[in-house]
Length: 127
Image 1 (tube, helix red, strand yellow):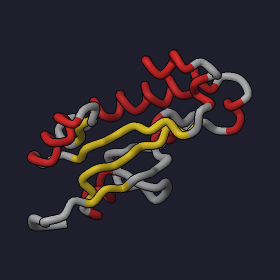
Image 2 (cartoon, rainbow, N blue to C red; image 1 turned 180 degrees about the vertical axis):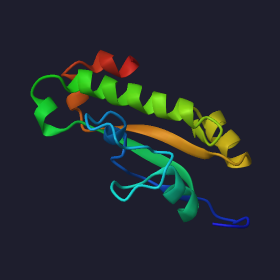
Image 3 (cartoon, rainbow, N blue to C red; image 1 turned 30 degrees about the vertical axis):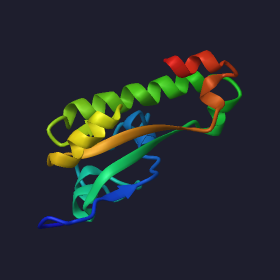
């Protein structure tokens, strides 16, 4: 997308983070991919300003290991964002959101999908 827009596009959900930790290891978020929901080039082309990344816990981890899987996804996310630091900014606070809106970066928020990752313990939310 070229030029300035009075509007900013927000995508409220994608399941791409699981590809960051895939056992196949052939997914590169920085390159255009023929599979998956999104990648950095397609986000740029679509003019997305804010992207929510869902930390979806796959069924095989829900009965046992959901928290560990969520932590693996978060680690994979952070590794990817570090490689793309010039283009991505994680949003933790309202101040971060305001900053992203003023610079030429894509703002990213993590969203834990479902409660399985809490493993029945609300204190995990602090982490």
